[in-house]
Image (cartoon, rainbow, N blue to C red; front, side, top):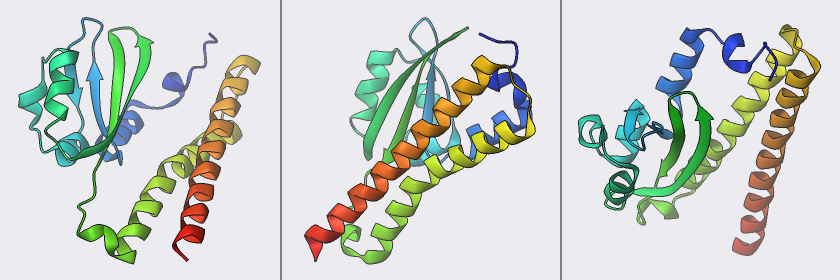
Length: 165
């Protein structure tokens, strides 16, 4: 890969802000298969204290998640030095609050915020930084992937509205 990686372009303070303010609960798994870090949103999403999951094996971590209100959990292989995978999760909505329009709109807004933030951030990087061709293509590809995610989310919501009318 080229010398100008995204990690090099972002100052540590930006990476820390992304970790602290993410809309998703995130857990990091090291190469030995143990939980090495969780962000503050993870604790809010799952109700699990950081101390309760630190050092758990990945299998034990998955078992611990079964007793939480997490409605969606994705595992992403990252394959970088010292880090094997990241888990991303969101909280399951309570059935009584699902009927209100405000909760539905808040859920839609939350779902759209992540790809929109990625689109904005990657666009800004492409405009303000000089990258070699390979890195520029990688950033543009990620940008297009997030546009597709956002488009799919919007289309899903439009289809749901047609069904509910």
